[in-house]
Length: 170
Image (cartoon, rainbow, N blue to C red):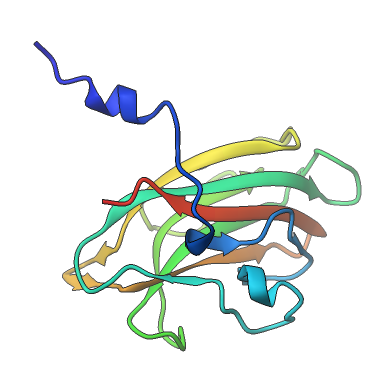
């Protein structure tokens, strides 16, 4: 008999305030790291990272898209927005690696060669949509203990309001 636990586990995801990597409905107007609950008004720095410990961890990054605009609601034609799950070996995040990312927008081909864990491409993106992106903290032969959200906006994208948290970690 087949093992169906992964179907059962996919029905719900647990929200934990300690695993928030971007506060609810945070509006981003430039490419910037995600922000923690306590640092939501900061312009450049972040405290919105999660310490996964020194072992291997896999789980899901949950991204709630609130709005995505290029001057009008819902449509991004020719633009590209990316929300990364970035890993680092220390809290300064001076050196980061992409553990997973989610793309929004119209692009003939992805601009990176990283394996996409999730991608949404097209020009009609509905508001208030939830995406679960699988990730793990191993990149190459290295483990990355610290994880954060990073929002990258193309020049043609004006704003994105999105929040994120980690869930289903094991």
